[in-house]
Length: 156
Image (cartoon, rainbow, N blue to C red):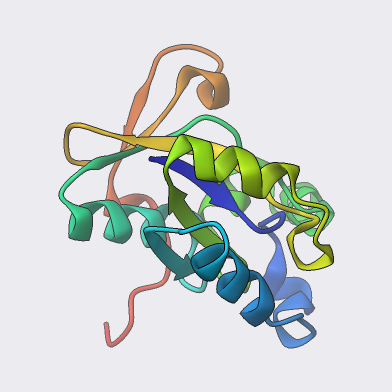
């Protein structure tokens, strides 16, 4: 399956997490019209949520591209962490991750539907376990992502 994301992530705690557009229409359209096989909101950080989706599906997620919100870039200037770190770990982005067959993903990406205007291909599911960051993101070799690297953990 290909992995799609409904919008840019990172830096949401600058206040955007309190002013968001629920992606209900996008989720319904991706499920009913484009046959998404898995959908999950990004509330605990893209990496942590995608890791859990892959673990539940008994596959590995490979991230190849992440649309970084301008707030993620601002956060990186303020705290010195890379904007990619913020995109992977900040959470409360209120975007959706969708896993879809490539042909269904292509159709969704070509859709002119207003609720899907920020839809972006971010990676793919493959044999294996966990989550890896492709060399496209790291500027070198593929890196395995570990839950200890970031994201929100409830109750602990």
